[in-house]
Length: 551
Image (cartoon, rainbow, N blue to C red; front, side):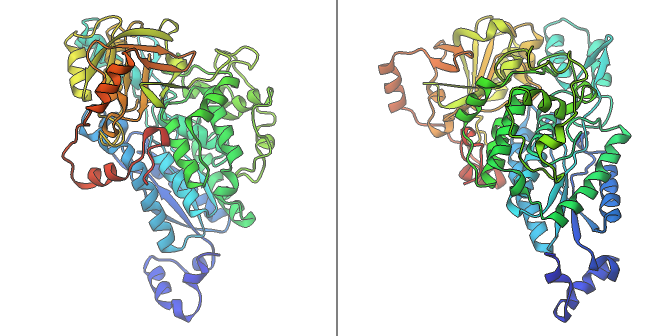
């Protein structure tokens, strides 16, 4: 055991004294020390129940002969951080979480870990930490929120943001807006659609780092508590069998995760997080790989915001394993990959049938023959850009229109609210990338306002920032290189024609090449006065095309 170097021998008597100060008995010290990384807090709805999950994990660890010891990880609620300076601090926490977990685990000599994340950057941050530490680790999330109900229809957080746009357009009353406030998010848990948190928790299953149901069992179900106990038991088995994160998160496993990503129609943020996690494993994933996988992977699910089904229904239909079972019928998965269960992917998904063909389309009858995410390139994004293709209306898959240019989210939002954006426009929001933001803010407010005002079928939005998983519409993010790094998005002028062709994976600025050359020759990117952590982050962060990793 790793902890033996801290616990045994006369030279470690001071360590044992401090363990006794914690109330640990000699018997507990003789057992493996299992760190339980708790992301519990009282400000994130997806994390307010994690204390119960952690208690259950502790029981599972103790039942299987380990000594569970809890330490914390931070988490930001992207919904609460949205639309103001707070969103600059969302993506940057991913690396803070990875760094602090690494520090805590190595400083205290844990033998194994159970990660208990839930929302957005918390999940990839802990997966990155697991890869770095490479000690036996199992994940169990806090679970998804149940859908709300307004007017007899299920709702999610994207419904709430779009209701604000509807109110601004005079389509609903203030009373109706208030009803949305009270009914859209009815329980604890990660927001009920296939947004970033649920995307990453589902992909944790696909990677093999979580147990069946990790991404889909609702937060308020007792089955979530049972899952947590099993996760505690599973980590002890992984320790016994020396199954480590890098044994699980292999190149083949990441190909599985990307394939499941395309089938589920996950958040575009997965195109930031999967490369970052892979990088910690010594594996490089580029955006071109994503398109190659998308070309052969059918899109089987249209979960909110792409459709009207929710994570609770995906769970009832058989969950992630049922989706994987469908994909295996076309030999799209590497079934021999080992997982934290000690079994292979093929063994795990055997018998996990699709129970609802309205929620999970059979592989023979997909929503589309290609995946839910597309990577677009062209002179406007030579290093790539990302769009959630499955959430784009058919009439907006190909679009051409004049650029409406803004140097920050706030200016774009003000123009949308004032009715200055018209049918056919392409809204351009720049200086919101990893370096330029800094922090690569999500543009959920402007995209929701566009949808809520009824412009979703005629207005596109592109940005070097990113989007919430709750975003729908022709919204293209991660444009790389970003404006702050001298990318062409920085020289787009008001009225320039922008061409979007999602089926052909193209994003083009239709301006004469000689004119563009002259603009680029004279281009000096804007700089912001920064301080604190954001200043250090901006100095170290790579492009969105590389997963916004720190160099």
